[in-house]
Image 1 (spheres, rainbow, N blue to C red):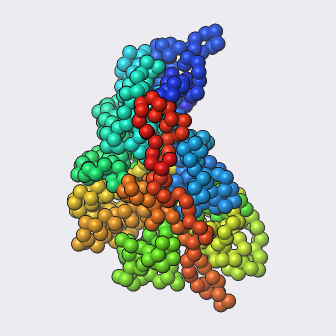
Image 2 (cartoon, rainbow, N blue to C red; image 1 turned 90 degrees about the vertical axis):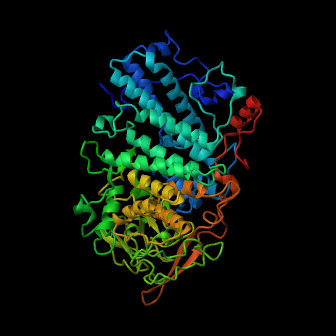
Image 3 (cartoon, rainbow, N blue to C red; image 1 turned 180 degrees about the vertical axis):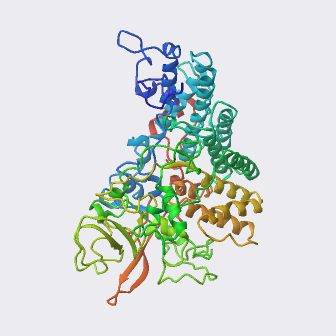
Length: 640
């Protein structure tokens, strides 16, 4: 019988981490793992002599999968706010925590915000992921001879360990790059660490694919989880999603070592996408809860736009574990959503903080509903600070003084902007200076979200935590009416979904010259939200730029952008065009009630986390020193 994850679990200390390069035992213990009685501990031999304990060891291999989403430190979205997608209001109010330190460049190999321990299994990735890789490798070294009741369990558990190891390696590659050895067998005290070698990015990706293929070749591993009791277990679908993502990353300019892997990326993605479709994965294309997302008080898009409603609904519903799920798009999710309406919505609602404030740059990425970009995507700004937009002259629908009309439905589903509305419990009485909303008493009501400079509750402000830094608020993961009297948390973060795989395929196809497939994949994404297909006849370079922008819009605020802007950069480049300056909508309310729209930088100085060294997170200083001492090689990332 298969057990639910984390429910049969005990404290296992599994021997050595990779950081055993440093001659430390896993989990920081200096004792032999699982010491025997009389202190109540059991040996690893005893673990693998018992079915339930063997399964519990595997459960511990799951223990470092991060919750992500809103679960970064202090209810933050982490990488979403460390790229040009958004600005974190805590950067000024609490400059000692991660966003403030990232923006101010307060980071070193000895003390880096991303390297530090965080709750919800985010942060401290080097330690966490090598710990789990060791455990997966050790499990695989023992499972063939372990006492397991059925061969079905033995084979499925081995497949899960292969896939979990692939996942942790993929995460290490995304954050740290090609500074990793390949660990097929668990390291031990007798390992000759002087012979450790850094594998290339591509070699590590091939190892990840090898592990994924081992999982895919296992008949006992399912394609979909169909019962809640197994809700957090990995599947073949996740294996295809990891392959899809990581071969794309290997082919990208930052990681390809001067080699062209686009044709391989295209082929792997083509097969992955087809296998997912063949096993029932499909885009979420129907509003299933119209009573909520198309109600008179949902205000998702103009005139109850069903495309905006379904997109917002998808991100506010957890995937269901049945053989006929409503959500056929989500491949893997984990963990709860967090208190979004308190910490990551419109701060005035609860009087606390707004958290994620989408950038003007993200808003600029949304096309008008006729499919025309707002800006010239190849060169979107005429100045370094992004205050001079390079408008697309072919766009006839966009008006800079009426900037939120006629936009892609995903814009309305993702962002609260000046003039949008929200119906929920507001914990304050309006004052006369809030012209759009006065009079209004505390309680359940509809409020116009006014973000002009000087608006007392929701206006643009440089320091107040509850207000917006950018003129925008996040709504993608916020239930339309959640509040003090309707405490609905958002759905768990969707770590993998079919929409991303489609865009991986489109990007690989465009770069491989397979333009017909690239068009088809992007247009499938666009069609589900009522956007017209891309114009035919684009050059390969133009198509790649449009695919990249589609990725930005479709995956907005899902932390993909942080890694995308990096992998699209060359090893000697930096992020000065995207992440150095973040801009805001500078809106003035005129005496007659109209608005004048302008732009301003969020602050007068640029972010400091745009330079070349911020393409990668550094290896922790003590780790890098020990690796140097053991191997005679410098393993540290450039600049650190």
